[in-house]
Length: 452
Image (tube, rainbow, N blue to C red):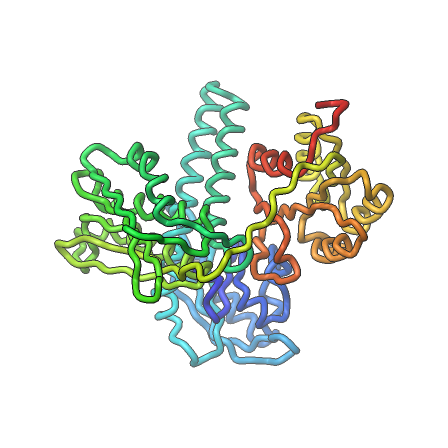
């Protein structure tokens, strides 16, 4: 949701460093989003305003609402008067961090942005963090009780990685990876799995459109959207009797609507119905994320006594959607490029245990030297984007200039879907499970014949 707004937004860890920021903030400051990761925003505030900004951040850490107008150094060394709105995020009673909204003073009421944009995002992220916390807690409990030990912890971390990947899918921006998706086939294919997950007493109705309903879409994201919306609907039924409907409809101009409705309670201001609010906000945030990627529109309707409906309107396929050719795996080595030794060595060990020959490089210059020493022998480069000396973008550009460039898999914490220089790159967003990593590698590289 926040990737698409035109004001700057960042999520700060309790110590004050940036865990995530949206493109609007990075652009205003004249940097890339990943360059702000684990950095402080304070250097962009002029010294005379830093004391007030620190005080506002401390108030937010304490759980208070806080805002301040400060002079900040923006792109091109332009000094601007910026309103900073701070809002703390608590998960399971513990402080997870602080969201800060930066906007030119006087342009947009901070409270309006905070309530209308940050609240749905907060519920979406808080729900994902809650699920991850439960998985970690269960794994730790099993380990303490001597049940499962290392195996249980490994399985738990794989589930956490899966949850983070799931959240990352929703935050993809529009860009590469959209193909022709038949919404009718999508919803009918998901029906058996969804039905098996519903509690007793909840009735599922799947209503595909009578005619063609093909859109240019991200099939993985659309499938997760349906799952997420159904899950939110079930929460608002409180596990009791009710109906959830998944429908595909066609509107004027061939626009296709993917909608999920339920007969659950809606939040109409009564205190006793407040429990349904997080799920309703989460559903709206999910729909907004998907609409953003597909250049469509999201909407919702809630009426007391009639339940809730949320939908995404998706543009139709007007011409053939190009789909990349499926190439056969190439024989050769895999070059792992990452400045984090634990990540680099772990991936290399995993590949070797599966019969692949792996090389390691801790920075971009070392990676190019290794590749140029054996260009015919390296079939795949697994490349991190954020590295010292020479970052992943520079390495990728250099590799693409080679006469016969290798296949490149970007293994990064940021999905570069909005970066045209990486538009054709294959991406695996961290954290990913061992199975997910190996699945991609197997599609691209054949194991060494001597070890297979």
